[in-house]
Length: 395
Image 1 (cartoon, rainbow, N blue to C red):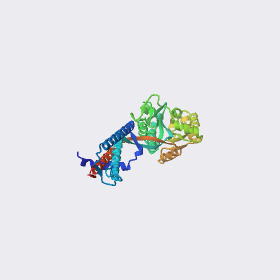
Image 2 (cartoon, one colour):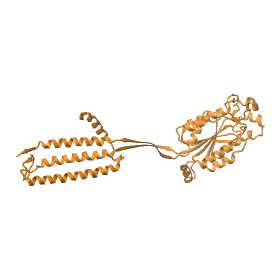
Image 3 (cartoon, rainbow, N blue to C red):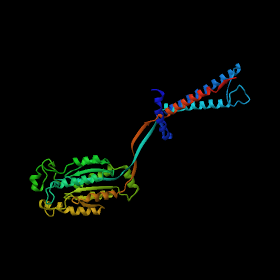
Image 4 (tube, helix red, strand yellow):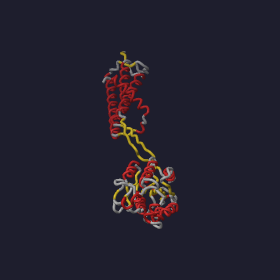
């Protein structure tokens, strides 16, 4: 590569230098800047002393037989003002070149940090019923209740994909199980919902309930103790997550503002619970959790036929609706295609906080810019020095 090949790179570096914010440079070798500056200062003063010594020696020998054309004041054989200005400018160029060279040796970089405002809010726990009754068919249909429940939850989670909720996922039947702790990752939550069972029922479910149970082998998880609908256990798991795994920022905000509402549970169930869940709903109310209920099927025909008109499975759904309203929530019907939008709108009414979250930090080398500037100053100093030699004449 010859010197002419360097010019395009130098020009490109100068364009970058014009828009570069020099005040934001970060040096990987910061101490190198100080060492370089000290070294340059030492060299400068050493050269200055040597030059003064040489000038004194020349005067002692009477060798002033040349002078520079220009303004010579009261000294025919002395250096003119033009000479002094040119030589001084040359030294300035040399010093500037060395300074930029020192900056380049310090390995400067520009650090770009991208940040985004992330909503740290709306702690939502989705609680889905996977009891054996979810294998029962919907009225006048061969579709299982659990299939509609899963579809509804999928749509709610997808609807809130961009909301950055801290969401968790719990399933309940005879037992309760946390399938996902609090997360803001939509893909993680959606995967948990996808992999969770539609229903947990005894292996003999089709024999026990006949044509009422429409799920086939492989569509539900077989378990001998999978027949009950213990919503209260699902709510107990939600209480645990809010108490032990809640965001410290949200906990702090709730303590600071007694009227703040930043938590919710979304319960998706067919309503045929075996145990009254009001104690758990009352505890959640004390924690300022807003309950929302999505009913899969309000028709109790199958429950009446299997358990009797006065059974808790038949009576509790109506009581559950009243409890949800009593503790500040609302209920929706899964069959209503507008329910998902209305649920999401209600969740959006919960308060939120914004925090700055570090997304990406990138370092970009810019050592070539001060190196290019140092190169130009060096070329300029050499040129000026060469031109100054043409201004001497003998007398």
